[in-house]
Amino acid sequence: MENKTFGQLILLLFLVANPIAVSPALAMLTKDFEPPVQRRILLQEALIAFLVTLLFLFFGNYFLLALRINDSALKICGGIVLFTIGIQMVFPPKPSKVKTLHSQPFIVPIAVPLIAGGALLSTVMIASTLYPLSTLLIALLITWVPVTLIMVSATLLQKMLGKRGIVALEQLMGMLLHLLSTEILVQGARFFLKSL
Amino acid sequence: MEIMELFSLTLILFLIMDPVGKLKMFLSCLKNVSKKRYYYIVMREMVIALIAILFFNLIGECFFHTLGISQTSVNIASGLILFLVAINIVFSNEDKKIHLEGDEEPFIVPLAIPVISNPALLATVMLYASSIKNPWTSIIAILVAWFFSCLVLLSSKKLLKKIGIDGISAAEKLMGLVLILLAVQRILQGLTLFAHM
Image (cartoon, rainbow over all chains, first blue to last red; front, top):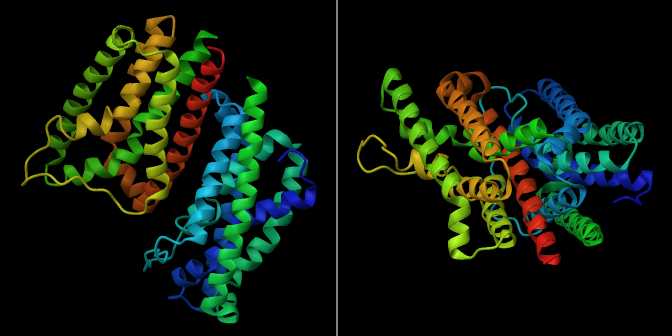
C-alpha cells in the first residue's frame, strides 16, 4: 500500500467503504419511511460513520501499540479480512438479510458496521501508519462526498440499476477487492520476510 | 517497561475473554432466574473460570516441558485457535445459542468453561506463563482482566438497555476484528521463532 498515489488511496477507501454494495440494504432498512425522512436518516448515518472512521484514524495506532501489533500483522490481517469480504461479495452465502427495524435505525446497522465496517476501519488504521495525517484526512473527506451521495440516493440507485444491475456491480466490486486484498497480503508477507 | 507489559497483557487477556461478546450467551442462559440469583450465578461461574485460568497459568510451563512442545508451536497453535474463533465471530451472522437440557441452571458448563475460560484464553495464558519472566506480571494481568470482565457481565442488563442488542452485536464484531489482529500477530511471532531456530 505504501506506494499508492493519492488517487489510488481515494479509490481504495471508496471500494472499502463500499456504498454501492450496501445500498440495497440501505434501501431496505429505510423503506418504511417517507423520502425526506429517509434522506435525513441516511445523511445522519453517513456523518456518524465518518466520525467513527476518524476516531480510528486518530486513536487506532495507540491501540495497536498497546497490543504490540506490528505493521506486517496489521497488513496481513487487513488483507485477510478484505479477501474474505471479497469472497462473500463474489460468492454470496445467501441473500444478505438485514432485519427490518420498525424504529428508526440509529448508528447500527447502517453507520456501523455496514459503512464503517471492519474493512474500512482496519484500512484506515493501516493507512495512518503509511501516510501523513493531513493527506489521509483530505482523502477521507474527498471519499466521503461520493459515499454520502450514494448512500443518500440509495433508493434512487436501486430503481435505476434494477436488482440485476446491483448484483452485477457487487460482483465487480468483489473482484476488485480481491485484487487489492491480495496485493496487501503479498506486501504484508514481504514486509514480514524482511523483518526476519 | 514493566508497567507497559502489564498493561498490554491485561488488555490482550480482556479482549480474549471477550465479556461483551459473551454477554448475549449469559443473558440467554440465565433468562429465567431472578436478579439476585443472576448476580450470584455470574460471580460463581466467574470464580470457577478464574480458578481454571490460574491453574493453566501455573502448569503452563511444566506442561509444555513434559510434552516437549516448543515456543514456536505454542505460538502458532494458539494463534490458529484464536484466528478461527475470531473469524467465526466476525463473519457469521447467526446467533449461536447453547441449548440447555430442561430449565437446568448452568453450573460450570457452559458458562465458566468453555465460554469464559475458552480454549483460546487457556492457550494464551499458558503461552505467557512460559514466555514471561516474572510470573507475577501474568497473574496480576489475569486478575485485572478478570475483574473488568466481571464488571461487564454484572452490569449486563444495564448495558443491554443502554446500547441495545444491535450495539452489542456491533461491539462484538469490532472485538472479533481485534482478535484476528492478535491472532495474526501471534502466528507471525511463531514463524519468526521458527525462522531463527
